[in-house]
Amino acid sequence: MVTTGLDQVVQELPREWHWKRLGLLTNMAAVTTTDLTDAALALHRAGANLAVLFAPEHGFFADAPPGANVPDRHEPRLNIPVISLYGAQRAPTPEQLAGLDLLIVDLPDVGARFFTYASTMIETMRAAAQAEVPVVILDRPNPITGRFMEGPVLDLRFSSFVGMLPLPVRHGRTIGELALIASNMLEFDVDLDVVPIKGWNRGWWYDAWMPSWVPPSPNLPSGETALLYAGMGLIEGTNLSEGRGTPLPFHVVGAPWLDPFRLADELNAAGLPGVRFRPVTFTPTSHKYTGQTCYGVQVHVTARNEFRPVRTGLAIIALARAQNPARFQFIRTPNGGYWLDLLFGRSFPRQRLQEGVSWREIVDWMEWLDES
Image 1 (cartoon, helix red, strand yellow):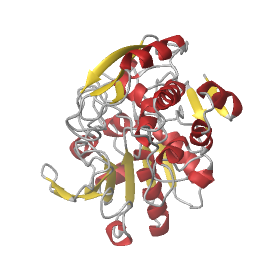
Image 2: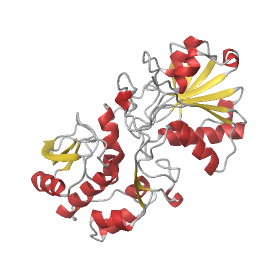
Image 3: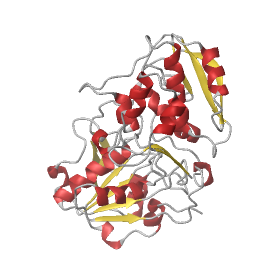
Image 4: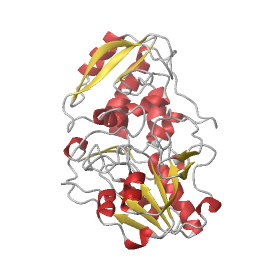
């Protein structure tokens, strides 16, 4: 039986947590494995003296759209404020940390470097270090296993809120391990403790220890979607639709100008492991191409231990671009860079794609981690 950090402290709450003023960075997707009670309520019921909550992207209820500024709100069950760290600010202010004796973090990461919860944790740790507030991370397993790592390691020149640590795209770490890496590698000295997981095998998938999937964000409705996200999330750096605004986010990829039959045939002929592709049409109700019919593929994972999502995402981008380089675009960032560079953590893949280099050569030529 797997017991997360949250499970352990709820079962036996540290004595001082009854009277110390505690802050908690979390959302309602961070739940106990026994009865799916969210961390805030579970700690409150155990007797923890919670004074304030902090919430990452998507908000405390994990329901806000991606990239949307989330306002502060009030937690009605506990009658305490919820301060958004994805709106006017990305980290707690000194005033918000003043008077806290301890800051607790329990966040449901999904195993992809560009999922922003780890960055919110890191910025919160940095703020806590400056305010001299100790931090405790309640660790929980990586839902897409701690066994597989894939993709290029981030070059720190491309450090951003979608990637702060020199890790591969699919990083294979837990949120507690990410915190330890950050405290050792980045320039801040935080008083850090991690309550480790008990009973977890690193090769286990989410369905081996989670009684039921709890979506950590609106577009990750299933564990398989989280696996796909580690590669299909790269599509966000292009003008292809990654399926947001459809019932199958990250399962379908397309654009109004693609030939779906050609794309499916070429992807299936590529011999990518653990996956098959089916031609589809879909019409997003939001995000890219709202109300327009898109033509593309549905990605079907057939063997999840063999499937390589990052390699698959790169192949889809390359073969879609090859169909119509004039219509295909890499999305720019506000400062004139490229969003795909930040997602990959390197400019090499995008530059070589623009030169017409095949996706296989890109994988062969760069420092591409593929370990289990």
